[in-house]
Figure 1 (tube, rainbow, N blue to C red):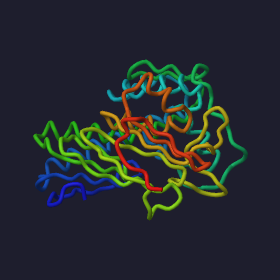
Figure 2: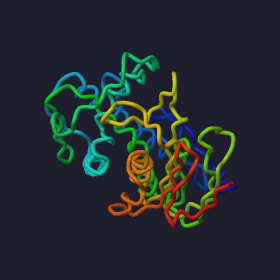
Figure 3: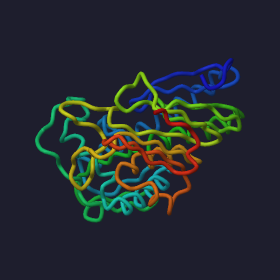
Figure 4: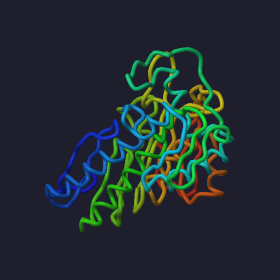
Length: 290
């Protein structure tokens, strides 16, 4: 519990469990606005519901107007697509469905891994406007949960709730200023920790091969150039000023060395590799257990 004595508002949204902690109980009007923001985000970005905007793009190519947050998402994704050589892409949805991570959660592969289509061949993303030349399954899961945490934090601040803490199933947003000690989940044993880190004002997000894993070694972090799960990295953590950036960079660390990402992003990081060794930035202030 980050702040003893605080109250907690828990709910499910965009396929994950959320807990918002505040010094006093949130009024019903605040709770309704938060749940409304979650519903709006899901209606735009969920590839698991047939009435979402991205579901329409998966059926029919054309021009689509997306919500205001799409501009920041597109800018972030185009940068990480470039840095990863196409491995990290918002067009990974079809590859996930091919391996069984589909709207029905069948978790049964439909065939061999399917590379994602090349961004430059099928997608033009300009601000809030998206134009596709073929049906594409857009999946912004690598940054979306973090962005929604930022949007909920902004909603709280707009309502006068300056002090709060958001836990989106382990992805954390702490507006500060009091730091919080956070345990880092062991990538092979969720009941253990491999270390701890102090989270000040900002966000800490993680990505791990043991989360959303199924079948024979399948998991949700796929290389867009091959459509296959990444095998070299098993877990990563990123700390940044916003949860959207931290969330996206935690996934990007599966494809791009942290030192390379540091050339274009202000963040701290830790990556654990499948051979057992770890790499981290000098400002990732924590302790790893032996």
